[in-house]
Length: 250
Image (cartoon, rainbow, N blue to C red):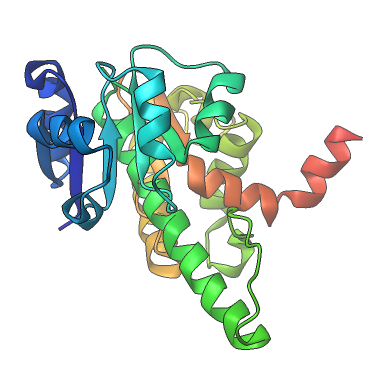
């Protein structure tokens, strides 16, 4: 089980996020005392490094987050925020080894997507580093983390399933209503089309998970429709849709 440590100055502030993480089956420790211990000695305890991620509460100041983050060499720190930060702000956090942020009141779907993306990114980085180290011996390499290229044509999708993926890609990682995804299909019965769509999305998820290990390749957003998993979307941009995206930018 993945373990997450939330460092805070007020445990009650973190209740909602802790519950959301536990719903996703993460083992979560929310601690004031561990943070106070760091404040006293200004040194990262070995115990902290036993967690996959460390979340830094909104109750912790930017100056404190910077000093704490600069003691890490790995990307395991996440900043909890009340609202989406500016790009310049998140870029500044990267310099402190705070590699990402998460909204304190985030939805379960968004939280799952964030954490799944980060887990897969780490797995891909680990595999690539092993390959490069094998190829270059002990020379140090400046590896840049990125989504790996993905070609969905390598998976046996039906014509309908490919059409759904293409429409969701065209939405540029925004959600599409179910009715929009069904537009132009032969059947005139709305319920029949929606049932067909639901079945196709389930099959897409299963095929992508089996081929690439990406869970929930297509998210269901209740009341909104469907949206591609951000990681899956970025992988497709670097693979199947690379030439199209390049031509659009020219």
